[in-house]
Length: 175
Image (cartoon, rainbow, N blue to C red; front, side):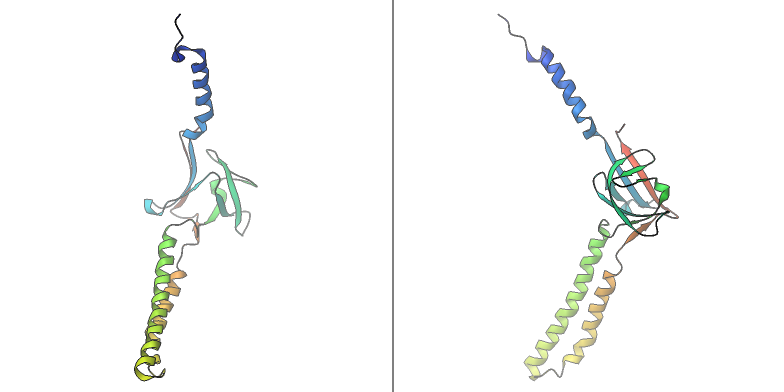
């Protein structure tokens, strides 16, 4: 007696169709793209399920919401529906990768100032037995610490939707 091959059976066809229907959403990718001019290095991407903090034309303060879906011309959030033209600014302090570099650079400057000042104190105590030479290292250490603090304030906080800055809704392989 001959057995039917699994590839020729009805079960395979039904299983294959079910697999295609279940995984079709996995092939599509939808996201919000923030870009300054034509510079591709400054692109920021917000995907479905992420927090989106924005300021709109109707509100003069930032609102945080979660992205539920992205369509061709609207952004569906858990509490609101937006069009890109209604967004005036997006809060990007925690999203922008350039902020990590600025944060590290600011910690480096502040740490260098603190270490230089501590080294001046230790050197003054070791060589002279008192803190008489500490003011000599105070200027440079305060300058390093101040430069680090200024770098910490240079972080990118918001993306303003004006001029060459654009907000795009991107749907790849989607419906």
